[in-house]
Image (cartoon, rainbow, N blue to C red):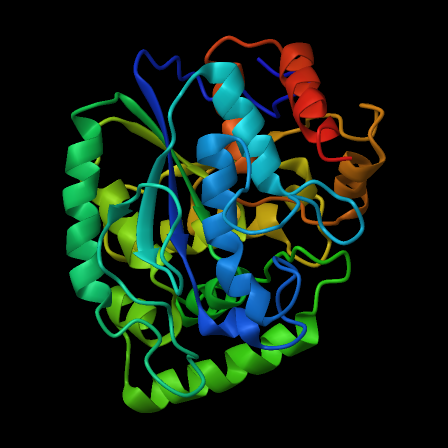
Length: 338
């Protein structure tokens, strides 16, 4: 079945669905110009905390902040939150390695923010975090039969680029900016891979240790041990996790993301999905025709995806909500912040 809202029906009708988001930081987000996920390079380190607070409680009260980009584009967390309200699901948050203490309850695997892979191993305890991810995966499987697993890691498309390249894929990645800072990401990736190759990292978890971010081993561990159906909510960052799982010889999940990631000419996402050997479902929430100037900016390539937004929209649809109902809910929620 195909319709304008979802590129293809995954055929999943969950009885006990769960939405989970893995939060983490990489110091790469503080490199000027590399991440659009925050008000300033240093401010990107707080973004996962604010997104988690918004998705969990429906508001940001811990600091004075509005969930819009400087151009008035609602953040992906507003989309994820509107789907939390529509579906009635309580999201599970997992702290993979945050620079700041979260304002809402999280499952904690006791990781640290990812280091700069040009200078040092980014995730020294990647193997440990993978094992802890497996524990979380087994835990979540006791409470659900379907898991939509997303992430919030500012700067994570750059670590994704490093990991995909290290795993042998001729990949490009997306960006929250309208103009993807491709040259900057490529330069970071070159330096990171040169250091990694000099250190002789070859195995999948060694690659994550050298050039990844803390979300990746945790997500890979969860997906390895979760016994129910799983979809990765997200674009190139979750694709890097899928590629890691393939290299580990584990189950490779399918992905759910927005058409804005698919249609990003700088990312080549659909081709990379095929290269990894999995499938992706693309949701089109019709932000161009919804009558909101901020949401319409998604259609010109701003933000595109994040905090599992595409997956959250897809999950609401799989739970039986009509596309019109879904887009109306997003519109009603983001209007509060105009």
